[in-house]
Image 1 (spheres, one colour):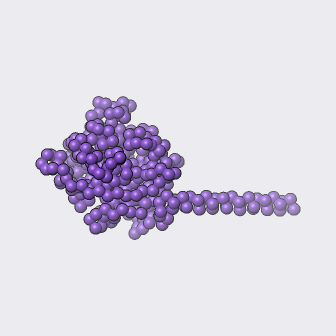
Image 2: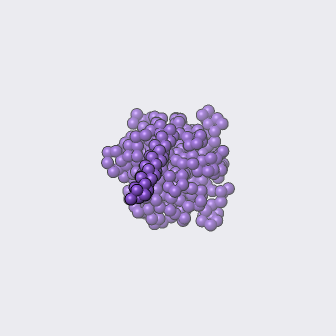
Image 3: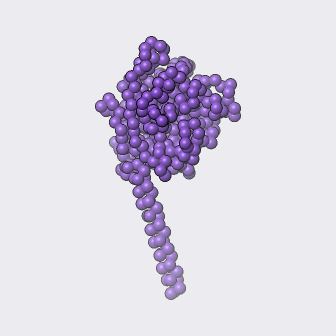
Length: 331
């Protein structure tokens, strides 16, 4: 009996030690999140994950009614997905003759990175501009009886962006776009700059009907991971909340062309209630799923209650596969 009591006491002590260790881990994780984001009053939970080998390099996603539309940075297709995130069709919006093993080689890819909707009948896509002229491209897509599209060169427009004083010693790498109040906001990954201009003026400029549109510039300070800065990766307007939701990610890469080790991603919110973009501190670390995620863009999914909304993230972990992740954010 004495021996059994001794074993029981030792077991109880070990259990207390384990509980203490787990508590330390939880505290450490919470502290690390606060250090990274400056915020501790939000709960982020991954609800669901879907993987796609037929949709490589996932880089942008949006929702129109009950359908989702997605793009990949090394794919010439616009993918249509149903409400259960199954791919129902794909439409070529660029040359498919350069495909090798379902992807466009890196030296030739158009690097579609930014997508948004103008209305329920029009989608627009921007190439990143990180390599000229291949990636200096703008696509207008019209959702009629059949999906139709128009392509425009952005060589001149991107050259003007590169010449802006705020772009000194920075690379052009457009990763997100949001349409709000008749304006386009383009999210540049390097230096985390947002270029905002009137959409009608932008179209007139592309059609050689007017000179360069006026561009407003906003800089946003974003958090780091392991000392490495995060950069914009996607955006979408939340019309009913007068906000833009955005994502940013961290890679250990030294330029906009090469990939690097994936360290993690963030989701954040920008206030546009005054008609201008206000820099924000409302930024939160996205949980890992097996490994750190390189989140490329975000789409609004649904509102759960007054504190909680669900979002859909598209993820490219540089393995020629894409993930679509449903994320709950309660704040």
